[in-house]
Image: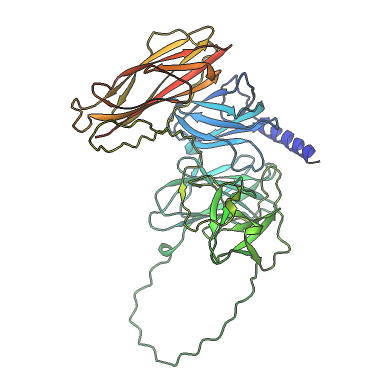
Length: 549
């Protein structure tokens, strides 16, 4: 039965995605368009392009049509630098769909790359976008607008003096809405739900960042009116008292004895942790969801729903999250909690903003991470967008100098991602030596090209050079740590070899890690496609040069 319902939901989703849109022409997408693609062992990557303007708010979604396909998505700028990457849509639980929300930093042609972790199958990619000027400014006075089949958007700026509260209300009977709050980078930082008699609110922190809120009907067939308001919250919202004459001192009276109070039973269902422990709060009912906060020792938080072995609770700092029932105790009337269903998304139960994973744990927790955690665990904020995979290269070189020298920490994160390859899967012949890799001291750079086998360009060569070094090795900038690493994208990457310094390396390895001076700052590498059928690979050579003295 569940499989049948899943298929019906998938069909309805496809009808919604593909209806009323202009289908993409080939691999070129336009705002509001969708296209079906496929991934296989022969074609592990799918490339799409679209044109956008600076400031456009863009949403890219990839929906798997086959149950065994786990797609991921990344997006490159017009200069082919990676801007965002996503593996699992944070707003759709229980699926492998991927999603990116971003504001375009420049005008030009952007590249979308759809891949998978070795899985194969069909997918739908949909592109939605709107110009920045489509949003109406929201300031002090409440604004009312009608929400139709198309969302409406407001923009506002945080206050440098006091927190703000965004409030969305409706008086339309039977009208439920959803609102997405986005920061200045276009990342979704909160999802709000509301309806008649059920306002949605969002606390805006002190600062000068700009925000947008996109409001849409939960049912595209139902329209309604939304009133949006932005008001001060906190000390700055309270006007100072008017100056008056100093009142006469009060007549001293005997203080009444304070009555003895007893703890009242909880009027609502709450979860509580032991006085010595804290518990993880996650973005969904499972240990595979991101950690979005913690229940502190002895803290009590309101329970608003239940799903299996997990409680949906309201966080003290705003928003909601999930905590497992066997690591907390409950108090109060908890027998008739709303059951939160999972049919492609959690059914909203309150108008409280759903906290998103803006804070990502510095280490990925195992399923046992919902047991006792240290109360001092720190979360490092990262933009939603997208967690970017990084590659850390461990230096293995030890300078032979007898003097004690400070060691440069050469941890290096390549940011380059593959560009759209030519239509023909054969690398074009080019010059004997490719573009050089010139690295200024204390910088990182990359160079890339394609090789293929058996036809086309089978070999490339690159010279590297570090510029800006002091000719005297004993002076500042006279010695540097050089690290070169290689990455590969395409078909048969195991058939690519890199030869330098008398050694042969493979894709994904660090090929150079050594100390250099002005006299030893140059070198070269030979890249060769050595075999395979239909081998076609884009290689990327990335280097960093960090001064030692």
